[in-house]
Length: 76
Image 1 (spheres, rainbow, N blue to C red):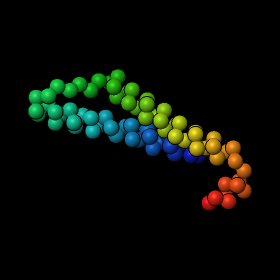
Image 2: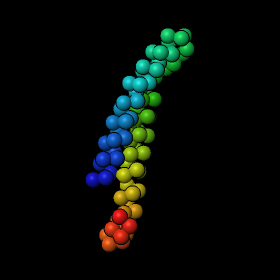
Image 3: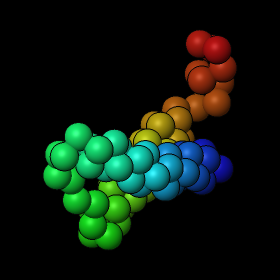
């Protein structure tokens, strides 16, 4: 369950950033500064966001699965 939550949160975060990037590109163009947002950059950002979310969900879940429930509750 933790993996799905981490994946969903990072995916939503990765999907919101292209809109912020487009807004920043519009602001930069007002000052005659060049900027280019390509579909490849958007896809790469979303891909890395999803990878970070999966790793952030798997590593703590794997660590928690390696200790006994009694020991985990001892430090709670």
